[in-house]
Image 1: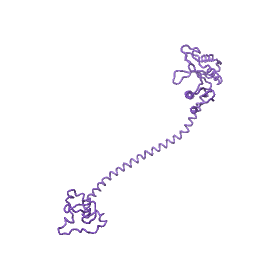
Image 2: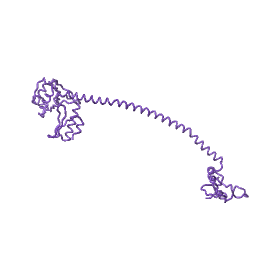
Image 3: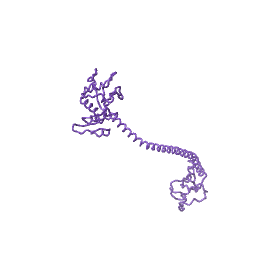
Image 4: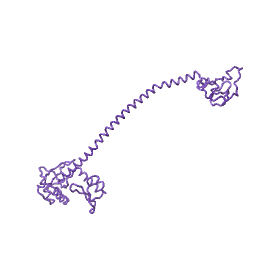
Length: 307
């Protein structure tokens, strides 16, 4: 629409209730904010100052005046008390929020400082732990070496030993006589002087006690074991025990670690169709067929290589 005063196009302005003319805010001597605050009734009854509120003899404002300069369009018009009060109210509202903002910022700062201290403490603790872990690495290697040495010494100390499993415990039994009965049954005899010591030892997780025979040298032990294994089966009734007939087993006296490895080797050999698993000189051997070469199993790594 066009302003009745300056004849310029505008999109928002005021309407005279008396003459029906339309004016932009600048020509109506109003600010947009001031006009909005008049209320619906006052806006509906507003009269233009150019025609309706002027004297009847006053000439009407010229309709063909030259276009208003650009700064007039951008002008906010005359300052009114209502506009000033509105700005002050708006400023007071913004200023009222400043203390709360300051409090919030102070809280944020304190929170950051708190967690900053926590992070510093955590970083320091991590640094201490890293130093301790680094110090533990040599100890870990030393411990592994010590375990290997201990396992080797335990194995060597059992080179001359035979473990006999399945012989019932009888009160006042004579272990030398039991061994002699086994000797007679398998057909390999030796004097008692070839035995360094003989005793029963508890079996972990069981009430049984196996017989450990320690020979003075490994060769007698190996020949005795080989002869006993050639017999295939030895029963308790074969050496004079009455009642239920149970099988007796003669084996190398292995360490707990080697016993566990032997159990796993037997299981895997069965799964992979290996024909033979045996122990000689405290070493575990496997062979897949009669024509294949024997393999020595010293660790789980060797076991994992079986195909």
